[in-house]
Amino acid sequence: MFFGKQLCGFKILLNLKINTTLTLTNFGAMVKLSVHILTYNSEAFISRCLSSIIEQKTNFPYEIVIGDDASTDKTVDIINSYTNILDKIKLKIHDSNLGVLNNFIDTLQRCNGKYIFDIAGDDWLSDPYALQTLVNELDQNPTFGFVDSGFDCYYQRSGKIKSFVNKNIVTSAKEEYINRHKIFGTSFMGCCYRKSSIEKYVDFDEYRNQQIDFEDYPILTDLMMNSDFGLIPKALSVYRKHRDSHSHKADSYLKVKLYFAEKYNYSKTEVTKIHQVHDEHMLHNASLTSNKKSGRKHYKPLRRPILRNFVYFVSSQSHVARKFFTLFRKI
Image 1 (cartoon, one colour):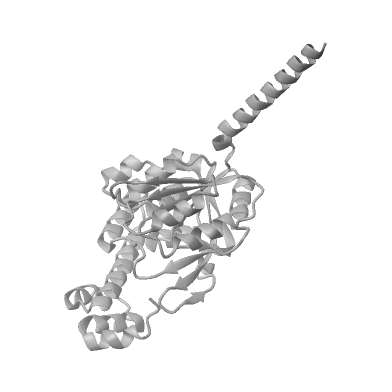
Image 2 (spheres, one colour):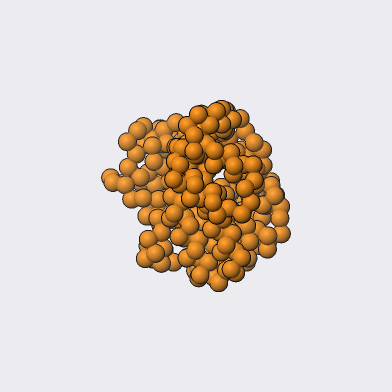
């Protein structure tokens, strides 16, 4: 009888171990949200980004999936200091630089979550319930391909924060949101995607064939034009603005916007506005370096030489003017 009880106890213990093993093995399938982060030489910023994610209050499991694009500073060491205590961080270090698009795709393929929240390694979450808010919106609206939300802007040079900078965008009607994105490209800061929608509507091979080297505008455009979406009228995160921030090359960005204008049959008026926005952006860049040729080229076609554009033009033509106006720049 005693031996029988031992055998019975052994079976119970064995079943318990098997069940525990199954639970651990299926952890990836249980993850509801993947926080997707790309890093490159982010040692000065990544700690604040990760800390803000770790401190999130949620009622669901989430993972932090990081793709480091061959950083040469201490970014990886800082991330590893977190992985020693947090098994939810999944870090992959690339031996050579893949570029933004390829790093994004590779990192996305390692995400197990039903939803994907994309955040840069130099930004951070300001609301402790940010992830919960985003997931709730997607849970309650199964037709949404993504949700966008508000954010504050931190200016690295001055150390000042401007609150809820995209309030007019995320509190607008969806039609207005779409129109603005087509022409300007919305600020890709607070977006959370439904992974199945990305798989259904986004063709990364198409992006590669078009020699597109970034992902945010293309992904949001394809999702926006093919699925419903939600807008959360609240600032949940902080965008750090500094001169080392990754930004799209202006000519490349124009080419991509014009490609999608043809793909989705934008109106002539919308295409004209896209070119105007490009000229304004290039004029601004010329003002930063006093590039006289570029300044003249892009100031000339602007129909409304408003004061801002005039200041940029003057700065592009004169080193003295550029140095003077630099005193008033935020970055």
